[in-house]
Length: 444
Image (cartoon, rainbow, N blue to C red; front, side, top):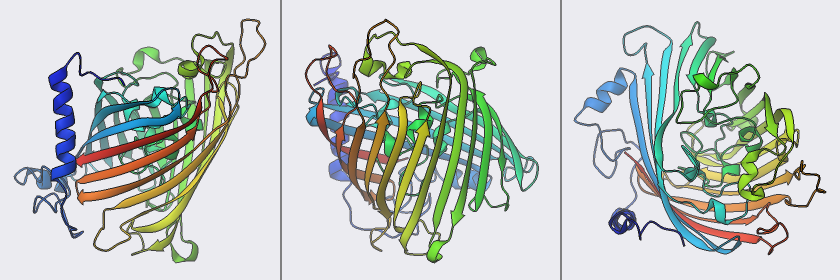
């Protein structure tokens, strides 16, 4: 089991103590749903409250801060590449500014996201192409640190049309009522597995935090009814860089997505479709498979595309449009298959929130995914080896709201990984991984 206890025993000890303290001392009875920044410590929506009234005053003026800290203890208890337990966490601060409410000018919206992580995850131990702990990927996989993945400004020129420019966190794309999490689909809430937070065919074609310019179209004026987003952005980008020095006409990505609210049987639902194309030169099956393929030399391919679709549909709603009830979801994705290794992707499941009146913040979900994998084209003159296979998995979670600002989530996943063998290529088989975990999310 990997840990930092040898190099920093006090930090390791304090991490475990704080995590355990959060699990033990926060258990409280059920609570009502009529909460705000202000109010009783156990009933308000954030742990730190309204900051002496400042937070509520700023919100009225269009300035809001969303701060959350997520901690995850997770282990591969059988199968996979190796058995281990790991602890890690991530913090996220989102700032939203509405220039109209602030008294400056109408139609302007500034969005800023600051994030950082610490500790370790078990993603490298499963043999899966899809990470089982999305939270530990950001801002940079396998690296502690703080970065700014989103800094962008949107200006609406009319009630129907706006322009957006800056650094985007594209994990706001592909939203789904039951399988996306808030606010950036990074495993803070709902599912932990990346395949059940966003469509991986999209994520393998573009960086998650590029420098971009685009437009937002609202055909009905209401973004809850229909929203269309079109953008062009750099195919190269990291959370720790601004992105201007990597702008290149031969490394651009073109993206379009539309989402519409439906009303089948008088119940809320959504339909979404998107397409993404990059003219960048990729390695065959892309080097983002490096953790699976090692140092294999792969051939080059120009351009990559992916198309994706998702839906969600309530079966039961406690109140229409309330976001509480029970329903099902599904995703489908297709790509070129090379350089994007995920040729076809499908996921489906059920989820719900606030099904019991006395537990308005509890959530649950059961999700399944399947991914059709292409094998790499080696450029060394060797015949193609069967390094990979199709991958599939199941995840089940239940989020227990200790308070409106603290969620405790037991989680279990069963993943048949894409990697067939441990190194060398024809080493020991990598079997189905059983991954158990527990997550504590605090909204500050």
